[in-house]
Length: 127
Image 1 (cartoon, one colour):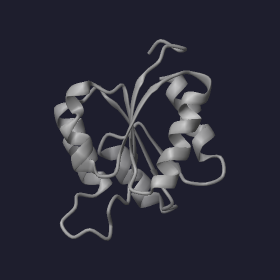
Image 2 (cartoon, one colour; image 1 turned 90 degrees about the vertical axis):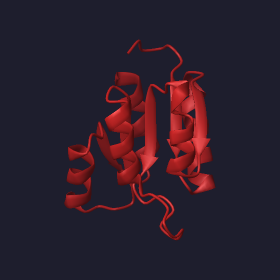
Image 3 (cartoon, one colour; image 1 turned 120 degrees about the vertical axis):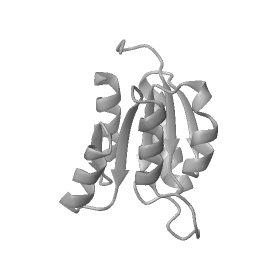
Image 4 (spheres, helix red, strand yellow; image 1 turned 60 degrees about the horizontal axis):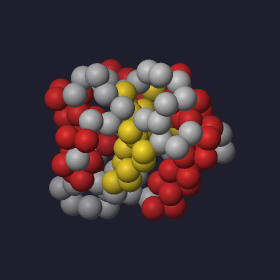
């Protein structure tokens, strides 16, 4: 991707504070076009907007019965849009979850910690 050009970025995160903070960080240096979705299903409905990057929470809507998880949404996205870059993020530190995300097509797996947003922004500019 062309570094420095605004990208279309989808943030799929059910925590409103996390998604807002990440969006604000993403548009601070380069005016990316960022769309926030609280559910994976909402994200899927907008895939016709052709995002360059999707940043998705692994544990989407864990309290909502029958809601798709981040890993399920990742699989759907990669089947229909194999070229879209997906960065999975989570507070889960288990190796097996990171490995599963990568095997299902995530570009990277980022643990939500104090440096997570900086890591994600750096990755996006390197795509």
